[in-house]
Length: 295
Image (tube, rainbow, N blue to C red):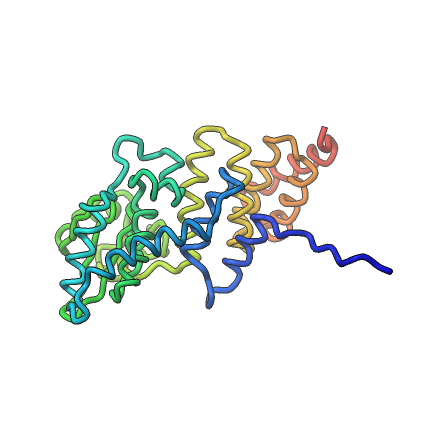
Protein backbone atom coordinates (compact mmCIF):
# COMPACT_ATOMS: atom_id res chain seq x y z
CA UNK A 1 0.00 0.00 0.00
CA UNK A 2 1.32 3.39 -0.89
CA UNK A 3 2.24 5.67 1.99
CA UNK A 4 0.66 9.06 2.62
CA UNK A 5 1.42 11.80 0.15
CA UNK A 6 4.29 14.04 1.16
CA UNK A 7 3.95 17.77 0.60
CA UNK A 8 6.89 20.14 0.69
CA UNK A 9 6.33 23.06 3.05
CA UNK A 10 6.25 26.44 1.33
CA UNK A 11 9.37 28.56 1.74
CA UNK A 12 9.44 32.12 3.02
CA UNK A 13 9.76 33.29 -0.59
CA UNK A 14 6.77 31.18 -1.64
CA UNK A 15 4.81 32.80 1.16
CA UNK A 16 5.89 36.29 0.13
CA UNK A 17 5.04 35.54 -3.50
CA UNK A 18 1.51 34.49 -2.50
CA UNK A 19 1.00 37.77 -0.63
CA UNK A 20 2.03 40.00 -3.55
CA UNK A 21 0.76 37.99 -6.49
CA UNK A 22 -2.51 39.82 -7.05
CA UNK A 23 -3.02 43.58 -6.87
CA UNK A 24 -6.68 43.11 -6.00
CA UNK A 25 -5.89 41.06 -2.89
CA UNK A 26 -2.42 42.41 -2.13
CA UNK A 27 -1.65 41.81 1.57
CA UNK A 28 0.34 45.00 2.19
CA UNK A 29 0.97 44.86 5.94
CA UNK A 30 1.54 41.09 5.95
CA UNK A 31 4.01 41.37 3.07
CA UNK A 32 5.87 44.18 4.85
CA UNK A 33 6.18 42.05 7.99
CA UNK A 34 7.26 39.02 5.93
CA UNK A 35 10.25 40.93 4.53
CA UNK A 36 11.81 40.61 8.00
CA UNK A 37 12.00 36.83 7.52
CA UNK A 38 15.22 37.41 5.59
CA UNK A 39 16.90 38.17 8.93
CA UNK A 40 14.75 35.92 11.10
CA UNK A 41 13.62 32.77 9.31
CA UNK A 42 11.59 31.69 12.34
CA UNK A 43 9.63 34.95 12.51
CA UNK A 44 5.96 34.42 13.36
CA UNK A 45 4.35 36.81 10.89
CA UNK A 46 0.84 36.13 12.16
CA UNK A 47 2.01 36.81 15.68
CA UNK A 48 3.35 40.22 14.64
CA UNK A 49 0.05 41.03 12.93
CA UNK A 50 -1.75 40.02 16.12
CA UNK A 51 0.40 42.49 18.09
CA UNK A 52 -0.63 45.27 15.73
CA UNK A 53 -4.29 44.25 16.03
CA UNK A 54 -3.89 44.36 19.80
CA UNK A 55 -2.61 47.94 19.67
CA UNK A 56 -5.57 48.91 17.50
CA UNK A 57 -8.02 47.17 19.82
CA UNK A 58 -6.69 49.07 22.85
CA UNK A 59 -7.37 52.34 21.05
CA UNK A 60 -10.73 51.22 19.69
CA UNK A 61 -11.98 50.45 23.22
CA UNK A 62 -11.35 54.06 24.25
CA UNK A 63 -13.30 55.61 21.42
CA UNK A 64 -16.87 56.75 22.04
CA UNK A 65 -19.21 55.02 19.61
CA UNK A 66 -20.23 58.39 18.16
CA UNK A 67 -16.71 59.85 17.98
CA UNK A 68 -16.36 62.18 15.00
CA UNK A 69 -13.48 61.61 12.55
CA UNK A 70 -11.52 64.60 13.86
CA UNK A 71 -11.83 63.31 17.43
CA UNK A 72 -10.65 59.88 16.28
CA UNK A 73 -7.65 61.45 14.56
CA UNK A 74 -6.67 63.43 17.66
CA UNK A 75 -6.92 60.35 19.86
CA UNK A 76 -4.90 58.32 17.35
CA UNK A 77 -2.11 60.91 17.27
CA UNK A 78 -1.93 61.08 21.06
CA UNK A 79 -1.93 57.28 21.32
CA UNK A 80 0.54 56.56 18.49
CA UNK A 81 3.11 59.31 18.97
CA UNK A 82 2.89 60.03 22.70
CA UNK A 83 1.54 57.04 24.61
CA UNK A 84 3.12 54.32 22.42
CA UNK A 85 6.06 56.59 21.63
CA UNK A 86 6.51 55.84 17.94
CA UNK A 87 8.91 58.24 16.25
CA UNK A 88 11.66 58.43 13.67
CA UNK A 89 15.04 56.91 14.41
CA UNK A 90 17.01 60.13 14.09
CA UNK A 91 20.15 58.67 15.68
CA UNK A 92 20.53 55.69 13.35
CA UNK A 93 18.35 56.38 10.33
CA UNK A 94 20.08 53.88 8.02
CA UNK A 95 19.95 50.92 10.39
CA UNK A 96 18.31 48.05 8.51
CA UNK A 97 16.19 47.35 11.61
CA UNK A 98 14.18 50.49 10.81
CA UNK A 99 12.76 48.65 7.79
CA UNK A 100 11.77 45.57 9.81
CA UNK A 101 8.27 45.98 11.25
CA UNK A 102 8.83 43.54 14.15
CA UNK A 103 11.81 45.65 15.26
CA UNK A 104 9.90 48.89 14.79
CA UNK A 105 7.16 47.49 17.02
CA UNK A 106 9.74 46.51 19.64
CA UNK A 107 11.83 49.70 19.67
CA UNK A 108 9.11 52.19 18.63
CA UNK A 109 11.64 53.65 16.19
CA UNK A 110 11.58 53.48 12.40
CA UNK A 111 11.76 55.29 9.10
CA UNK A 112 8.82 57.21 7.60
CA UNK A 113 7.64 54.23 5.55
CA UNK A 114 7.47 51.65 8.34
CA UNK A 115 5.94 54.14 10.76
CA UNK A 116 3.38 55.04 8.09
CA UNK A 117 2.43 51.40 7.61
CA UNK A 118 1.64 51.04 11.30
CA UNK A 119 -0.11 54.40 11.55
CA UNK A 120 -2.32 53.70 8.53
CA UNK A 121 -3.27 50.28 9.89
CA UNK A 122 -4.33 51.71 13.24
CA UNK A 123 -6.16 54.58 11.54
CA UNK A 124 -8.04 52.16 9.30
CA UNK A 125 -9.02 49.94 12.21
CA UNK A 126 -10.66 52.88 14.01
CA UNK A 127 -12.67 53.89 10.97
CA UNK A 128 -10.49 56.60 9.42
CA UNK A 129 -9.67 56.79 5.72
CA UNK A 130 -5.88 56.87 5.51
CA UNK A 131 -3.22 55.91 3.00
CA UNK A 132 0.51 56.20 2.48
CA UNK A 133 1.94 58.82 0.15
CA UNK A 134 5.30 58.32 -1.60
CA UNK A 135 6.17 62.02 -1.41
CA UNK A 136 9.60 62.72 -2.94
CA UNK A 137 12.25 61.92 -0.37
CA UNK A 138 9.91 61.25 2.55
CA UNK A 139 6.95 58.89 2.95
CA UNK A 140 3.85 60.61 4.37
CA UNK A 141 0.30 59.73 5.41
CA UNK A 142 -2.83 61.43 4.11
CA UNK A 143 -6.21 61.18 5.85
CA UNK A 144 -9.57 62.08 4.35
CA UNK A 145 -11.85 63.90 6.79
CA UNK A 146 -15.31 65.36 6.15
CA UNK A 147 -13.94 68.90 6.12
CA UNK A 148 -10.82 68.23 4.09
CA UNK A 149 -7.56 66.31 4.05
CA UNK A 150 -4.82 66.10 6.65
CA UNK A 151 -1.23 65.18 5.83
CA UNK A 152 0.86 63.69 8.64
CA UNK A 153 4.61 63.20 8.80
CA UNK A 154 4.85 59.81 10.56
CA UNK A 155 8.51 60.44 11.37
CA UNK A 156 7.79 63.46 13.56
CA UNK A 157 4.04 63.30 14.14
CA UNK A 158 3.57 66.76 12.67
CA UNK A 159 0.54 67.77 10.66
CA UNK A 160 1.81 69.45 7.49
CA UNK A 161 0.20 72.51 5.97
CA UNK A 162 0.33 73.26 2.28
CA UNK A 163 3.21 75.68 2.89
CA UNK A 164 5.19 72.93 4.65
CA UNK A 165 4.67 70.56 1.74
CA UNK A 166 5.66 73.15 -0.85
CA UNK A 167 8.79 73.93 1.16
CA UNK A 168 9.71 70.24 1.30
CA UNK A 169 9.12 69.86 -2.41
CA UNK A 170 11.20 72.89 -3.42
CA UNK A 171 14.66 71.23 -3.11
CA UNK A 172 13.40 68.32 -5.19
CA UNK A 173 12.15 70.63 -7.93
CA UNK A 174 15.39 72.60 -7.92
CA UNK A 175 17.61 69.52 -7.94
CA UNK A 176 15.80 67.65 -10.68
CA UNK A 177 14.71 70.35 -13.08
CA UNK A 178 11.52 70.67 -15.12
CA UNK A 179 11.90 67.37 -16.99
CA UNK A 180 12.72 65.25 -13.94
CA UNK A 181 10.57 62.39 -12.71
CA UNK A 182 9.63 62.02 -9.08
CA UNK A 183 11.37 59.14 -7.38
CA UNK A 184 8.28 57.05 -7.06
CA UNK A 185 5.19 57.92 -9.04
CA UNK A 186 7.03 59.31 -12.08
CA UNK A 187 5.36 62.69 -11.65
CA UNK A 188 7.14 65.54 -13.49
CA UNK A 189 8.95 67.87 -11.10
CA UNK A 190 7.84 70.91 -13.07
CA UNK A 191 6.76 73.99 -11.12
CA UNK A 192 3.42 73.87 -12.93
CA UNK A 193 2.53 70.42 -11.58
CA UNK A 194 -0.09 70.79 -8.80
CA UNK A 195 1.02 69.75 -5.34
CA UNK A 196 -1.88 67.30 -5.20
CA UNK A 197 -0.25 65.07 -7.80
CA UNK A 198 2.61 64.46 -5.39
CA UNK A 199 0.11 63.41 -2.73
CA UNK A 200 -1.50 60.53 -4.59
CA UNK A 201 -1.92 57.30 -2.67
CA UNK A 202 0.99 54.90 -3.06
CA UNK A 203 -0.15 51.51 -4.31
CA UNK A 204 0.60 48.49 -2.10
CA UNK A 205 3.05 47.15 -4.69
CA UNK A 206 4.87 50.48 -4.90
CA UNK A 207 5.00 50.67 -1.12
CA UNK A 208 6.66 47.27 -0.73
CA UNK A 209 9.02 48.10 -3.60
CA UNK A 210 10.07 51.25 -1.77
CA UNK A 211 10.61 49.28 1.43
CA UNK A 212 12.78 46.74 -0.38
CA UNK A 213 14.70 49.41 -2.25
CA UNK A 214 15.50 51.14 1.03
CA UNK A 215 17.04 47.87 2.20
CA UNK A 216 18.73 47.42 -1.17
CA UNK A 217 20.63 50.68 -0.78
CA UNK A 218 21.56 49.92 2.82
CA UNK A 219 22.96 46.48 1.93
CA UNK A 220 24.70 47.70 -1.22
CA UNK A 221 26.39 50.51 0.70
CA UNK A 222 27.52 48.02 3.34
CA UNK A 223 28.63 45.55 0.64
CA UNK A 224 26.48 42.98 2.42
CA UNK A 225 26.07 40.69 -0.57
CA UNK A 226 24.09 37.87 1.14
CA UNK A 227 21.42 40.26 2.37
CA UNK A 228 21.44 42.20 -0.88
CA UNK A 229 20.84 39.00 -2.87
CA UNK A 230 17.86 38.14 -0.65
CA UNK A 231 16.31 41.58 -1.08
CA UNK A 232 16.90 41.47 -4.83
CA UNK A 233 15.16 38.11 -5.03
CA UNK A 234 12.11 39.62 -3.35
CA UNK A 235 12.19 42.55 -5.77
CA UNK A 236 12.22 40.14 -8.71
CA UNK A 237 9.20 38.35 -7.23
CA UNK A 238 7.42 41.64 -6.57
CA UNK A 239 8.31 43.29 -9.91
CA UNK A 240 8.76 40.41 -12.36
CA UNK A 241 9.02 42.64 -15.44
CA UNK A 242 11.32 45.26 -13.92
CA UNK A 243 14.35 43.98 -15.76
CA UNK A 244 16.78 46.29 -13.97
CA UNK A 245 15.97 44.53 -10.70
CA UNK A 246 16.67 41.18 -12.35
CA UNK A 247 20.03 42.49 -13.54
CA UNK A 248 20.85 43.72 -10.04
CA UNK A 249 19.87 40.33 -8.65
CA UNK A 250 22.35 38.73 -11.04
CA UNK A 251 25.11 41.09 -9.96
CA UNK A 252 24.46 40.39 -6.27
CA UNK A 253 24.54 36.64 -6.90
CA UNK A 254 27.83 36.99 -8.75
CA UNK A 255 29.36 38.59 -5.66
CA UNK A 256 28.49 35.38 -3.81
CA UNK A 257 30.10 33.21 -6.47
CA UNK A 258 26.74 31.82 -7.59
CA UNK A 259 27.59 32.30 -11.25
CA UNK A 260 25.25 29.71 -12.76
CA UNK A 261 22.13 31.29 -11.25
CA UNK A 262 23.50 34.77 -11.88
CA UNK A 263 24.00 33.86 -15.54
CA UNK A 264 20.37 32.74 -15.87
CA UNK A 265 19.15 36.03 -14.41
CA UNK A 266 21.47 38.14 -16.51
CA UNK A 267 20.54 36.24 -19.68
CA UNK A 268 16.89 37.14 -19.02
CA UNK A 269 17.80 40.80 -18.59
CA UNK A 270 19.79 40.84 -21.84
CA UNK A 271 17.02 39.08 -23.73
CA UNK A 272 14.49 41.67 -22.60
CA UNK A 273 16.81 44.68 -22.79
CA UNK A 274 19.13 43.88 -25.74
CA UNK A 275 19.81 47.56 -26.47
CA UNK A 276 20.44 48.67 -22.88
CA UNK A 277 23.43 50.94 -22.40
CA UNK A 278 25.19 48.32 -20.27
CA UNK A 279 24.32 45.36 -22.53
CA UNK A 280 27.73 45.01 -24.23
CA UNK A 281 29.66 44.99 -20.94
CA UNK A 282 27.18 42.60 -19.36
CA UNK A 283 27.40 40.17 -22.27
CA UNK A 284 31.13 39.91 -21.58
CA UNK A 285 30.36 39.38 -17.90
CA UNK A 286 27.83 36.69 -18.78
CA UNK A 287 30.36 34.83 -20.92
CA UNK A 288 32.85 34.88 -18.04
CA UNK A 289 30.29 33.57 -15.55
CA UNK A 290 29.33 30.72 -17.85
CA UNK A 291 32.97 29.88 -18.35
CA UNK A 292 33.78 29.96 -14.65
CA UNK A 293 30.62 28.28 -13.31
CA UNK A 294 30.18 28.23 -9.53
CA UNK A 295 33.78 27.57 -8.73
